[in-house]
Image (tube, rainbow, N blue to C red; front, side, top):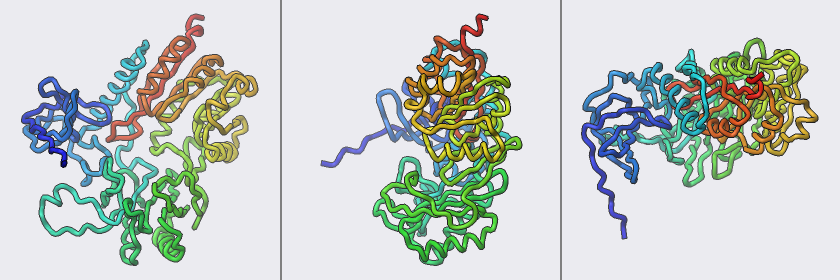
Length: 474
């Protein structure tokens, strides 16, 4: 028996009152929260509900009764469809204010700890073309927008080179101009698509698992170097060579060109080896006179200019002295470790990914830094009391964990090591708040500085300075 189609209401004249988590906006109807994407506080809208739960509903706008004076005009033609840059319709100062409020709310509500005054979110000087890395997906049929379907015209649903539609693994929106990454990013993507169509290349079909063209990653460094990684669905060497040879000629600014053959049913390439086809096996990022090697699998903050501001905050909070030992936990490719090395006696970095640690060591060598040492391994297994005894008592610890936060056994080792200061850099204030609560018995939060790494999104980095409580009593 077919499931009866739900009869969801049309809500007229709903006032959007506030922004909410995950980039959503919301109002209330009969004491029920209603989430409405692509709206801003002050909008009054008619909303068609598409999802109904006991405590909330989700809908979409069918008519704007009144548009908020806070609303900004989105600058991207793909706004509202591709799923990225959801806050283009909100002025940037309003975005920063909400990110500050978001950090305050999560540290207070989840952490339940005493906090100093939280500094206003540090804005990004560049709010467009600020990313140094984008990953694109190829598909044999592009996603048709609601407007295109409503126009009821004969539309060519040809191949796509762009981004996944949110929550749809097999649907890809064809992107004409993306405002996230500087050129030659758009030009490389568009030329690759044009060449492949002209020469009869097949594009990926995620459901049938067919097609040669799968993915493409473009990395653009602040030094001007460009890396391109093209992922193919089969090892069709003649077609691979033809496309890559064309890109080498068409874009001489490409300094590193790789390809990967991925025949798996998922797009993950972490377990596959990139093949260097042309140029160097890395690009170089620069920061305050330092140079950092970035390979095809390396992690580097995707907003290069704002990463410098983030690391300056972390270094300032660390208050390093020439005779002190710094532990940089979750060090990645050693960017923070090498950035801080000149301010202290010794830096000990720990990271799970062996390739990242290899890059960290190379980065120290590249910059003539001799007071760093790096270890690869699971943080829970590597960082123990014996490790601390062997590598020296840390005067300062910098934490920059993934979104899941710090494992509790690691926090216990940190508490026993008892550094005078901890600097906690987080991309997820919610898990950061949880971890701060675990440290609260021994450490007091002395400063909080949100940093906006991703303009026009709800994401925010947050830097917290913790000082050992017995130091405060001295």
